[in-house]
Image (cartoon, rainbow, N blue to C red):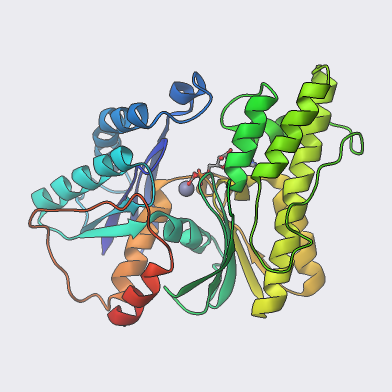
Length: 347
Ligand code: KG4
Ligand code: ZN
């Protein structure tokens, strides 16, 4: 079984091939960072048009990758949601066209399930059950995963996602898009202790997050300062430490509540080195195993979608294969918890 995975939910065009026996066979990514950096954020219509330009050549080069030997796939998995509607439609329609041409099934994939399963592409891969911290540009969630495909959201952001807060704060500081890597880089020159921002909602019981107030605190600070290079770095560091501390406090609380002994961390912000180091050292103290995808699989990519397609196919007991006969759907808004009943029905 060889699955082609297609990712087009936001500003990265990703395609990859996952093989049941050989694992990840080939992987390609076309980033749109340059296109959107002019505007300081993703412009949905431009994202969709760029996916149209990039996706088919990307798939073609993937199929002809020397490790794939020009083989077509046995199924085509694509991100069906959540994400930008126009961007999702490009991936869904290309996936459906290819599946029709090859006479193979399509497998619609939930983007956040893709992120959640990304650590499975590493060795050692985590076993179920585990707690997942999903931190991306659109989501910040703590998810209890009791068994394969069963998700209970224990806490999530009430406003901005952690990645979104990085992006907006970077803009306020005059740094590049995407803000996460820009802030992390700039913070390397920062001096700790000059600025201090709050750790939102950590004094409240519960596992929800809120990052929009933190972003406003930074903005107010920026307006009160002369923003030279050192001040920018000092603010960037204080902001990064506040986000990392907040995420770590809530993760530890969720581990206590859920009594899980494994933590997986994924999504774009999961590439943050300070966050990785902090969670590694906290988990070591607790005797909890922690798993991250490699850096390039934290942010959006086709490999996690190909793997999630394979995962859905195995959950389905390899049965019920329906080849593509026209019609497809995308879900710009879609809760991860909705997958639990589908997973149970498929068992
Ligand atoms: O998962 P992702 O690629 O796309 C979404 O599904 O949203 O996440 C993108 C987000 C952006 O907000 C970006 O600023 C953030 O991940 N990000 C980071 C880092 N690398 C990417 N945030 C903090 N530190 C990083 N090193
Ligand atoms: Zn993502």
